[in-house]
Length: 139
Image (tube, rainbow, N blue to C red; front, side, top):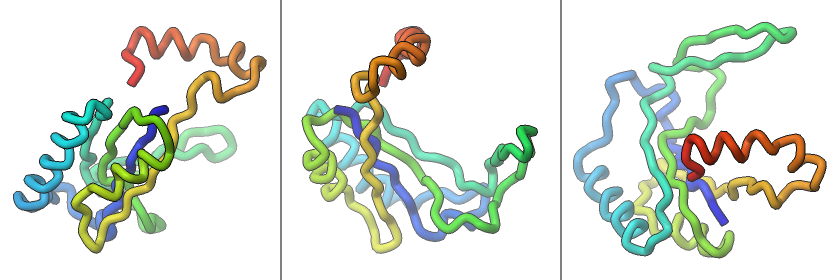
């Protein structure tokens, strides 16, 4: 089973584009990242720039509308993620609990949808998806 551990740092929704984490926080997170890797559960990980340097594409009446960040209505935003492969939801939660998070951080644990999770008709409709995963490296 694959799970994403989604880091949601409070206040990141209003961070300036040049915001970077303090060195001591990066060092603590790197210890956690190394622990995930040594355990053989780490599939991928990345940090994200603040929303102030991003954009959102919404669809009004089927037409794309681009809004540059920051986003006034944002209450929580994604700061980064880990993709892990573990045996259960409980194990994914255990890993999230090991993260050296601070008082202003929350980790959301979400299971990745696998093709076998869907009924046969949905699997048939999504067959090209598996080819895309093969071509571009399934996480």
